[in-house]
Length: 329
Image (cartoon, rainbow, N blue to C red):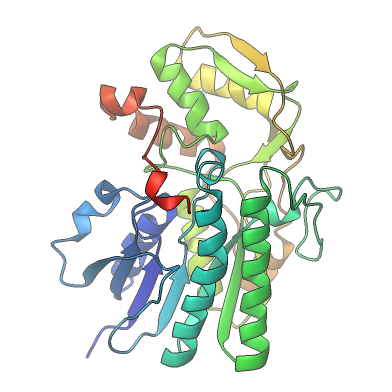
């Protein structure tokens, strides 16, 4: 009997590569697709010998063709960290708009179920706390983060339009801060930034007074939530994240304790439109999916720190991930 087939875009990225692993374990034939702007081939290198995995080097902002039947599509292609989408803003907007349009069209033609990866950034700098799926958000469309926030908000609108007018079987996940092995150390997000500074013997940089909050979900928990949402019959957005909230200052102290380093904490001005609060309300996920995170922050941080300690000196001191010149137009 032929294996069910799933297309995963952004397959060489942090989340995409873990999703490839999960669906191969679940007995799927996985078609990974990535243009490698921010993805890393090393994340999926272990899958290439497997007959149930194939890789397409392709930009989903251009026409997407996949031969044969396709039961599922997971659209996870997108720059996802500030250091990336501030350098390649136009590409970020295109993958959220043109890329989503292309993949929804593919889902329609193949009669596939499609799950699109949205983000807690659709809530902007929230005035409601914690954030429920019914909250419309507080987003600055012309601010530096607008290219990512609005790309994801448009993606959700496009997905719902295809669901409503073309009867495409769609799912929307709003992902909150996630961490774990295969994160890029230099991707600009707070967790790898702190661990990278600790490993290099640098002081930890906190922006603002450190009282802004984040909620961190370990990648294995997130992947389980994605799998359950894909297999559910619910088509409206669902928050998936860990509601265990912590201030950035307290988080920096946790990293210093974890790494056993002697670095100080230094303070710098808060970037424009940086959210002051971020905590998911996961009532829907608990009720609809019987899902909630299982891995504690202390356990997840230990696993993640052990992964980062395996990086080479070159990777540890690499500041710029890629040359984006060819992707910014």
